[in-house]
Image (cartoon, rainbow, N blue to C red; front, side):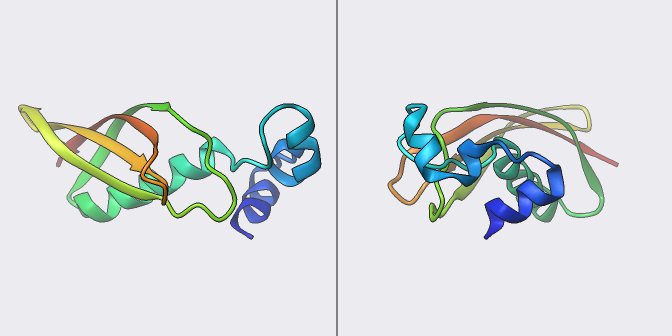
Length: 111
């Protein structure tokens, strides 16, 4: 349901996200979620974590694996260091098979 809703909201109707047979034919082993759907979920988690007094100034992430329909994604992170009022955080996301699907860094600026 989320993948279909994201396709409609974003206008990205690429069949790899919506047609399981097509995604298999092109070698993906089945449908995959939009990468930006996962990024949006990551951003929502970060915003909840940092609160209203801070803002995300930069996200630098790499996708490690595809996210499939039905995957439950868990986000995590830790503060690596801070430079003045900017906190540099390691971030990651894993699926329910404990496979890392995304990793990178977030730069959080305190107001």
